[in-house]
Every structure is written in structure tokens, then in C-alpha cells.
Image 1 (tube, rainbow, N blue to C red):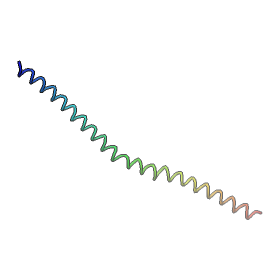
Image 2 (cartoon, one colour):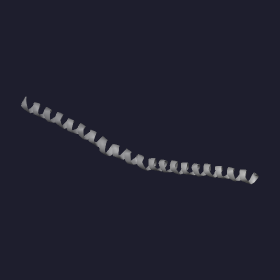
Image 3 (cartoon, rainbow, N blue to C red):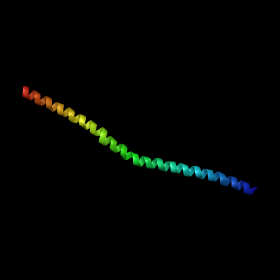
Image 4 (cartoon, rainbow, N blue to C red):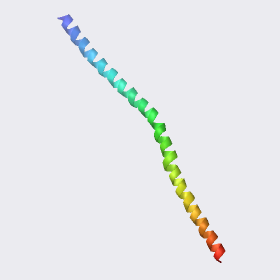
Length: 75
């Protein structure tokens, strides 16, 4: 009787430990993915989106300078 109870407890503990190890593996994989993907998104934002916004700003400044030059030559 004692052996059967001990085996059941062992099986339950084994299931809990296997679930716990799978959870930890999943957590580690997610954490590693975040650590590797965060710099990619960071650089994507600053290299693509931020540069695009700065190019729009430069284009706007260029248009303003062109209009100033045109107005100063025409006056």
C-alpha cells in the first residue's frame, strides 16, 4: 500500500517537474527571442521609419528654401 502511494506521488511529482521544465524551456525561448528580436525592431525603427521622417523634413526644408530663393529673385 505504501509503495503504491509512493509511486503515485512520484508520478505526480514527475508530471509537475516535467511541466515545470517545459514551462521554463518555453520561458527561456521566449526571453531569448525577445532579446534577439528587440534590437532588430529597434534598428528597424531608427533606420527605416526615423530616416523616412527625417527625409520628409529635409524635403520640406528644401521646398521652403526653393520658395525663398524664387521669391528673393523675383522681387
